[in-house]
Amino acid sequence: MATMTKPQTYENRGKSARVLEQPYLLLILAPLFWGGNVVAAKMVVGEIDPFLLLAARCVGATLFIYPFAWRFVAADWGVIRRTWPLVMGYGALGYALYNVLLYVGLTTTTAVNSSIETGALPMMILLANFIIFRVRASWLQILGVAIAISGVMLTATHGDPARLLTLDINMGDGFVLLACLTYTAYTLALRFRPQMHMMSFMAVAFTGAAITGLIMLQLFGPGLASFSTLPSMSPAVWAVLVYVAIFPSMFSQVAYARGVELVGPNRAAPSHNLIPVFGALGSVILLGERLEPYHYLAAAIIIGGIVLAEWAARRT
Image (tube, rainbow, N blue to C red; front, side):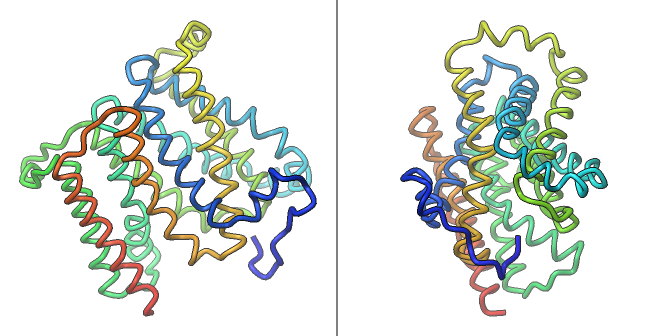
């Protein structure tokens, strides 16, 4: 997205489109939808297999986005034809693999834990950029990253860091941390993303995610035939399927991209810190989960690390 281009306006496209002119509302909606992904998936644990949930989400998201993205895909077809394996790979990694690891993890850990753990994603990305691409970082930034990740470890060990010495980490928390590492790799790989419209990129990436989701369902889940069980599932499962296929998949991406377009990436980046807030609040309000003392301590540590790293970044 060209930073020198004047942001498009939507003043003459109806009242609903005026939302696209409210950057801070958009930057609240995006993490709200992302945080809701954790709560929604936890809500149907035991009712739908996580691999079926992932496959249905990716197929649904792909079908939903193409009517909006078709004209952009047609305009970018020359680039897509040359780079489609790479773009589909982004979807396989950042959408399919990330979410299936998250969904599998949620079968054996709480949504509160998952929300707090995913809250350290910006710090993991900063650290990986420093290690792999030698992106400049001050010692204060690195210290902030270390502090934030220590808060994640406190959460993953359920308040007992000594469990790390025996590698006694809840299996579900382990899967969530693997999901975070997967999304970190996806984010780093975005520096090689081909130049095309965001909607084109999302449509082709979702296609790759849908294919990957179907393959994983056949290899590791109950098989493609399990799609026939969807019509008989509860309204709660269908509500979750519709939500995860639309809101965390497409609307959040559009809201965040538009927010960045209006206020710039530096002012938009801190909105990611709202993801664990919304996820934890939703877990308590909608799922009835309890906040344990170690959750408060871990959240304070992670927030402290994020604040320190961002303050150091603004000084450089």
